[in-house]
Image (cartoon, rainbow, N blue to C red):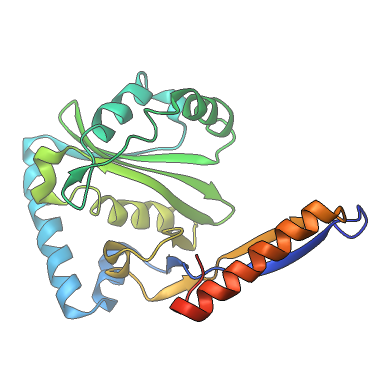
Length: 227
């Protein structure tokens, strides 16, 4: 298509990859394949959550966000407590509420969206938002009530998604871009990311593309990675 329109392009591999976890069994089986340290930690966390079910803890998978009244406000309230490296992080959903409401309205009824929600009684304490794409589940955003951090509720929604995926015929959970340590507890499998650079035959477009490519090459030579 690009050739037919007179555009030029180059496909560039990215340094950051997408860790993913094959779903070929329930979580109770997959956790046995992990190395001893994460396996022990995850089992202990799951045991704590199981004990709290008597106090009203539950996990729900919402396949259509429109089925949950006031969902966007609940997500924003929990996201406002999100910490990264010990500090409050910049809000994302709260910054673009109209975008996410549009996603709920359009993708939810088509079956392309999901939300894993952990609650204590009627109080939401963690959520994990993502997409359903073919036979794959994509994890997009997560947040949790900071007062429940000892339970690692954001992390412990992953087992719920694995069991949901296995029960509904999904074969992969993709953590998406970034190789953060919490993802690496689960898997050593990756998808390679690529960037598609497109430019036209106008000299200004060509110059900008060549400058970008030269800078990317120079950075790689200096630091051993692309930026």
